[in-house]
Length: 568
Image (cartoon, rainbow, N blue to C red; front, top):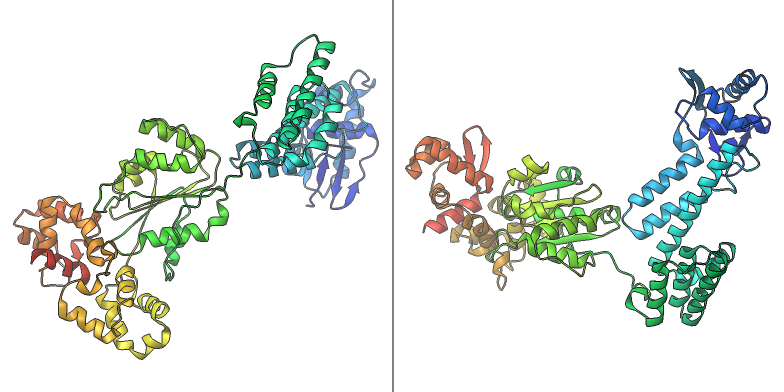
């Protein structure tokens, strides 16, 4: 089947590529237009006769209609359009996007749902560009005349909407001449005249703007005996007072709050593919690179979110108190240009969702403590992507809010070595390859530990010996920045544990085997088996142990070292 394009917003016709489809005389085009306006819907024979002939239906009207329909079927044979008879009438089956009238309405609907001013204007521009003159040009029946009149009103309204958007975008200078001509054509249209007044004022022509208002007032009084609408009078007063609300809008840059990504990023291909859903929760042990993954994805896809990026560190596991949802909302609302912020968290959350409605943004909620901390910060509509990072599984967010959880594992040995190559140089790593392999193992595949190790001035072999000799995490401290040390990152998760789970964590650091079962944990903690399982679930959800198989748990070497240090 071949593609065909139908044009109603101008001279009615059908086009295949650049070639016009020969439809015959005007009455046949009227029948086609009567079907296309309600494409893919049943139109009765009586409606077709009334639409295409009005009061001038021929004596053998139905026979004439059937003849025209038969000829149209032959014209469209081999094309992606079909006219079929249904119970109650006829249907012209066609892709709505092949009809300029329906494409016009779809673009308008998309534009009205769009949050960004520039994106909305672009959609409206595309809609108006579909017009090639007067709708149904050269054709006249009462029904067609009525449809044409309504479409012209709709088109004129969209033109005014486009002017509002251009004014909001600071494009007043290019509008003055255009609006002057439009006001001459529509001298009593108060919205149009208001736009002309505002464009003149913002172009530094206040006196002319006030004169335009006086001209409108005189015309309305002469023609209708009325004053301008109250909103037009308020605009006039604002122009007189040079009020703030009529000043030229200052271009507001979309927020770009996501911190810069880490300079070296390795692996995570599968996790990067999984991100992009409405809400994703990135979980994993401390130092595994959750925040780095979120920032990396946000920067990779910044072009997909023209309305910007919001970011907040919720401090869920920092030494300081976690940030409240209310405080986070206040920061977001200010970044979105909201000045009057209500006091309550529910009101702030509702205003935040309204501000994001129709927007395409990335929202990164870093270092979250609980689902309750996150929920008020979730946008209410599609279009935004939320990335949450946490050392907790945030099961409630997955179950109740439909979040997609991504559990970030430690780097493989090859990925850890690649990270060392990027940071230290391939020549150095290859020259000390056995030591590099041992360092990757001693750092347990944690990107944070590898980054700290790479900053140490010692050689790789000396650093491995230092790690082996100290038996604790001193070698992975960051001088002058305790918050970036491996020990501190582990402590954030540890401090959030209930006391019984914290005690079990310390005891597990001394378990002699590479892994353990629930019974071994029960024996270590002196609790019954169900109690041990509950404590292990707490440690697993906090990513301080890993479950490798049913009833088999493991603690990586750095966490084991940390647990022993706590017990010393």
